[in-house]
Image 1: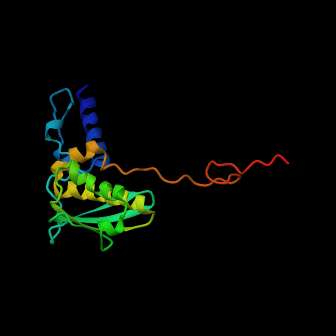
Image 2 (image 1 turned 90 degrees about the vertical axis):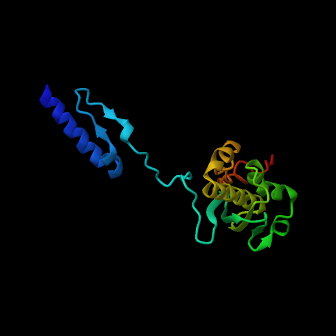
Image 3 (image 1 turned 180 degrees about the horizontal axis):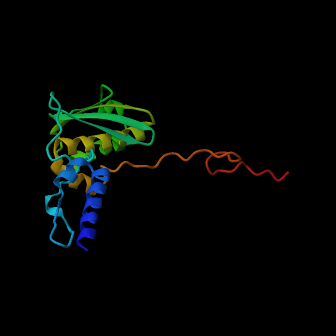
Length: 188
């Protein structure tokens, strides 16, 4: 029976070393007190590039960078402490997004995190229309805020600002006028 336990331990260690990342295998302590149970107190969590670092990710110029997406639009967003100035493609927010609804969309992450007027935003956005671009910039602002202040993640996640809206335009099908619209029926 003891020989079986030894071979099981050897198999577990061999399997762990092949399947698990090396730093987790090194930290994992297997107890040899007859139960062959794994002691999880010594294991460390491996972060595989998640959005929640323990410390802020700030570059040399004091900015945090994130990418936001919505529909076909992709926005690259940089935030840094400032007076609340928002530039999109080098233009003021009032000139780029003329509709008040789109301007309100961009300010939502700051309002929910209670950081209105505390960060300057510089964004470059391409692809899609104005609505998709505004959604992409909002997504990028939210992600950049969590990188600058990791404590805001729970607030922004609860509001749904960190989730990428996966809805895209449905493709046109053959035999139809659009995705689902049929051609006009002609009786004769």
